[in-house]
Image: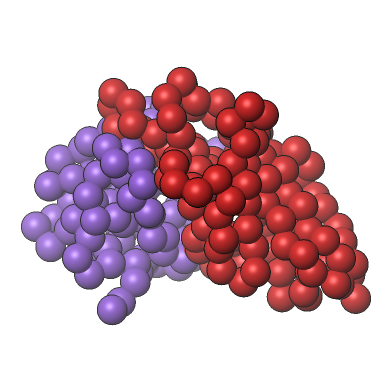
Length: 115
Length: 117
């Protein structure tokens, strides 16, 4: 079974500071990994996805994530936080497995950006 | 192209009642998945519909049921509502089976927020 653990339910950074949101996954098959963002009162929007091509994945709004198989991690980073980045971020895993398993999400990390 | 649209956006029901939530998939997408997002939690998979049949189900009781129509739109029905059913219900669509090809990206709607009193 696949699972995702997001370390830290709430992360607070200053505007212009590095953003680091942590995600570790568990999967018995080669995983597909995703980061989604959810703004207040909205659905989920895809930031980026890893599908076994390059291990460093670039997404929208300046975010990127690095797949590290040895650490079973897929941490999300952004060099310089902007006020508009304040939102809830979800890491998710999917994979080829019997039963057609769709996305399994972590519990989310709320990012606050301080002016 | 239009995205995924859901209705209603908000609704309030009382315990024991039944509710129907509706979803129109993104143009060209033939697969619809439903997720439940409780307050402060990540979305949890309820079930997925492909070609009008349920294709994959999460750990939800049978009182959660669904339909998919020939135009790929979908309904989520919940019977005998319980207080714990209060949540944001998200619909997502994809071109092809999510999970069958794990790279398929789900496009989410804004959700229907259900409050059960």
